[in-house]
Length: 111
Image 1 (cartoon, helix red, strand yellow):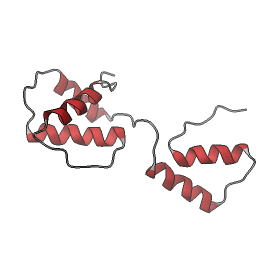
Image 2: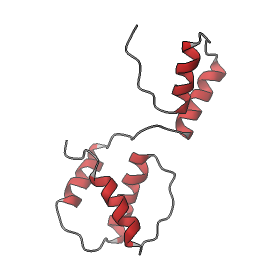
Image 3: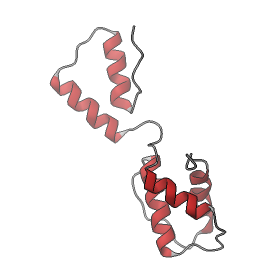
Image 4: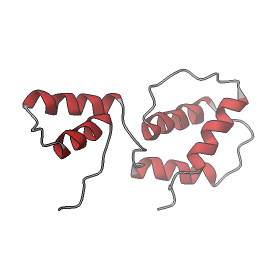
């Protein structure tokens, strides 16, 4: 038995179960698998080199306030990596930004 592939989303999870039950996928199944993976992804996407560099530079300095450009960059990385449907956060709400920054700090941006 080979090494199982990484499950990217709901489509892969369903395909794993149907494969285990001996149900072969048709072209329609494969198409639904891809759509479900995009609709309901699992886990985090890897940071790009540019995102890593931005976070390294950002966290290397102290920030009492975020500029609109910093907000735009940070929220873009957050939406991309956490695979969250974009929304417009309250730009003046420090609690929202503290939460986003806390989650971004947990990412492996040093490597």
